[in-house]
Length: 250
Image: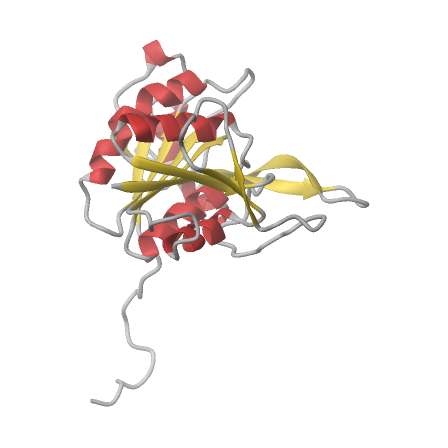
């Protein structure tokens, strides 16, 4: 199976390398393509943002990913996913893995996440999609914990029906304290990262946006607060059913 690895933290994120290495370990044929800069909070946006005359797509290299095709793209992750499906980076992928995001993506707020947006775009186009995010609290990101969890998160996805999308969140605990991956519903509360910008320049910082609500028992926010890694199956865009007009003609 061919895998596209992308994110919304940008091509320089350590989490991108962590996810790519996990995909290689799972036996996937890997291509990496990620935004040239921070693209948090972009949802499934299709914006292309070339800067200073730079090409939209440029070949690059990443430490630790020798021999793996890597591209920096002046666009949001959902656009990168569609470009990959169209063959921009080589043969179209079977699966899109997005992350590992620096910060959780939980609850209703996943609607706004560029990390999740890439995975949902994959699912809406009949591919497998996974968004992986790491809770970061007071200390540095525990990338080793994310790396320890991914071998358990990938097999259920790779054996699923096309169009399946999973949202995985890793708690801020040492690898030795990591519990089993746990099914979780979406909380009415949630968090997502978004770019902020100064008055006289482009986006320069990332702020955490909190969607108010409750961490209901058994939801992602509740389980993460208890130190458990979570997996939530998401449904790409589909009709909800119901009749609000006349039936179509035969």
